[in-house]
Image (tube, rainbow, N blue to C red; front, side):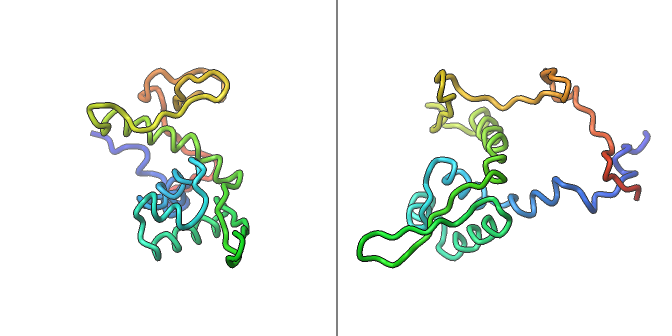
Length: 157
């Protein structure tokens, strides 16, 4: 049996690996879920998710530092200035990933009653679906039709 061609290429500059350094932790994805759902304030996130205070502080700092969220000041009457967290364009660009994760979870992990969240198109009300298309506009019918190949930044091992 011949070894896979992928073994000939370095993974040192792999963008999937780099993305997972930022996103590859449960709480980070849940913080993003909250912001996509309109939950923007620290205390609301903490209460809604059950995330420990220091973990939430660290995840928000990372997401702000990586440019996925931005801090916006607000002040309630008689209180000190606080911040809420809003998605940047870089953060909004993660929406298809969140939809894909939700679809996978709905398919394999939902309760018998069904998924607890529905994501619908604002204009028509139909359920959202993550779909892959090639640059030529062709829909991918089966993921086995996708072939990973070295890109312009690939380096031989």
